[in-house]
Length: 276
Image (cartoon, rainbow, N blue to C red; front, side):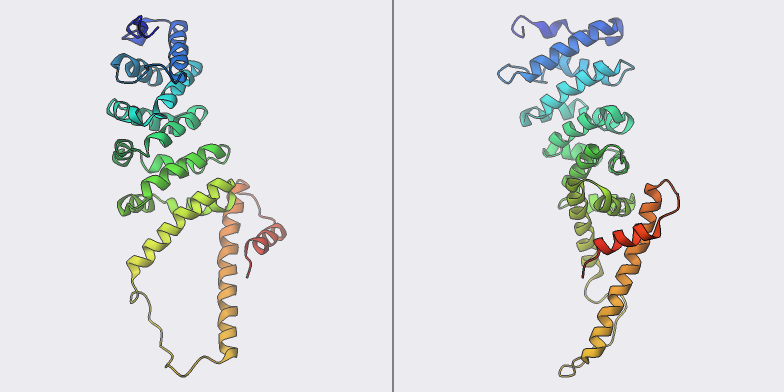
């Protein structure tokens, strides 16, 4: 079909064909992109023009989903990244991922393919929707897979980039990550905790060894009395528990829609989460 010039039959303007015809073309492209031994690549302008036109138009959900499937298949091949990024696919996918929950998972999966390429990562770093839209997706409790994918993309963007981590921090990512690390899926928790560790390490590096309040030094040869050391440990343990209890109460209240928190359940959860 490709050799016969089937792609030349794609409509240049999607608004001049009916919905049924659009869907049939989308189904054809999805089938072609799924076959690994075909010479199907996004370098042909009519392909991406048709796909992006569908995704940015008020077409049916079914047709958009088919077109997203094509972009997902194309993005899985690293050699296609240049053509996809240069034709504005990243912007289209970011917009879809934050605007349509039903399409978000497939759009984020395609972005996950592109973010590992230099061009794809650069396009996301330069986007005005990043990181805010990805942080917002982290709060979608009814879409755990989307949370996992968004956390993955944020990890790639934040890795070895203090500029991106600074943008994320200013956008309020830390408290959102804390919530994901406590209430997300196992994979989402791991990714959130990894990001939190990076933010913690960077904050400590910025503070330096001499910043912050200074305490008196104990002279060498004069160790703390065992009783004083034990009291200090006990005090720190209580402070950690109090802080964690407050955070858990806030998160639980949010999860319950602002309702009253069951103190017995909360204490049980805290005792299980804090082990010393």
